[in-house]
Image (tube, rainbow over all chains, first blue to last red; front, side, top):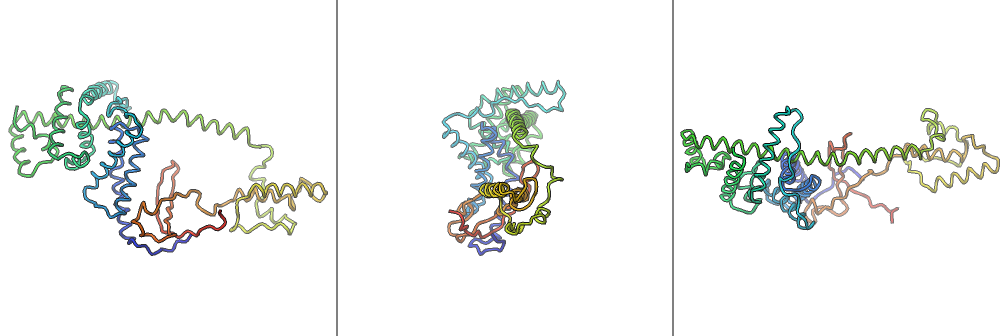
Length: 179
Length: 223
């Protein structure tokens, strides 16, 4: 084993730039992507596997000189498809998205506030269960900081449809929660 | 119902063209209904994000609470197994145990030459057996008392000492990543690999990763 550099067909500077870009993307998107997948119904372990696979695909994409435009939506789409593939290959439904029930209320909350928050989450959970799958996914991706255009790319729908879906979903939630 | 409320979410999400957005802004400033709806949308969005965050945390806590008892049970089992299986009475403390250099000075047998430290290899089972057999032969012949550390009898201790100072010739863990996963086909010459140096912290997380190209020599001693 030697440390001497070897001639590579791929310029090392390009390789390094791609690596840096991938690392920055990982830092930026790893957490929201994990949260998205968990809320989509995956277990935490499964979500972590999917995130790793998605970033491995990103490395391959960069290595194959793939386009760097809309890379965030590309990454979400890969993760989204992998999650759905797992769901199909396991032949079972994941836990219904956003349906697990929230038990974690921050310790620093006073008991009264914790109870109020729990009630609010229960109401919200019931309202979320009434949303359609595409409405839930639109809201989840929007909560992850994606633009409507990016959400449309992930879900394979037009930007205007995303706008309408988000609008409709929020209206439903507001009605159910009596906001 | 105001005609503008249908486009309010898009405006709040900054998804409108500049001229449309400024028109919307002027309208919201004048329309109380839209202002109320904007506040509701904002509240709903915040609540939804809080809910997602709490849900993600809940799943993490559930996993931790499920794994923790298994982890502690496994740890306790390992400790108990070590306590019962380890031959405490036969092993001297590290302070009492002579160092490798001392043993070499005491060694009177010229036939036993320990390889230099830079070429130390892990003792094999066969080494142990051979050393034990030779020592037993010499004890039987009366040339070596079991309590003395000299000659072949020291071989065992030497190899034990070596095992304590054993340094792996190669990295303990090698992860093979196919070149085609990172480079286009034919971009990397055959026989070239990358070595990833990982610094793993006390909590098991990778703290630093350094990737460097390296040439691996194919080992001839392996089948």
